[in-house]
Amino acid sequence: MSYADEFASSSPFAIDAVREERAAFIRRTYAHLAGAICVFAGLLYIISNNDALVFPLLKLMGVANGFLFLGMFIGASWIANSWAMNGKSLTTQYMGLALYTVAEAIIFAPVCYFVSTMIGTPELLFQAAGLTLVVFGGLTAFVMITGADFSFMRGFLVVGSLVAFAALIFGAISGFHMGLWFSVAMIGLSAGYILYDTSNVMRHYRTDQHVAAALALFASVALMFWYMIQLLLALQGRD
Image (cartoon, rainbow, N blue to C red):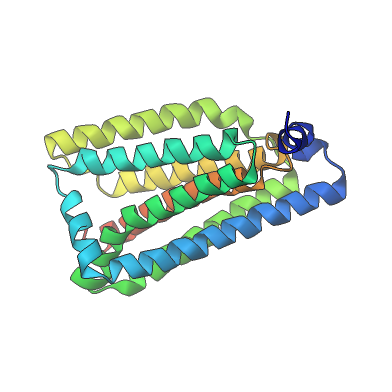
């Protein structure tokens, strides 16, 4: 066994670590989350403001290629999370976080281009981002202050995700528009994921898995941001 493997296997879970080590793990996790969000925002700006990059992505948003677009999202998420969670080295975890961050920027770019350029409401993106950060901050504070364990939510979240996925497939096939209440329900689902993932950061991640923990939190934040945009578009009658 290499030194890196031995170190990884001997690292305690955050909940079992001494106070200073647990606090350092939390700081590293949220610093990496903030870094991933900043990189995501930078890539999103570059892609959505480059016609050569964003126009092909706009075509992928069409009904004919919708499943290809969805498949890219699911595939990138699975690979990234697998690398981040199962990797013995920090390098592998960073590869997972980097892949997911780039994939999210690619997926969000055409929607952001549509909102800011095609319908001319770039302020809507800032509103959605602000609301997402406020809700995320509130839910995170609640878990940190109360120390509540939300691991029991896993089954509900899995079922909710499967129902949402089935609804999206049905909507794509039938042409049925999900509308305002679906966005509200998905924001609720993403809030559940934030509670669950924040609880897991403390209880089910080793202190050397701060990059993997940041990836899990980033995925929940991205999901909420996506449906905050959809919600605000629906409220403006432009969905």
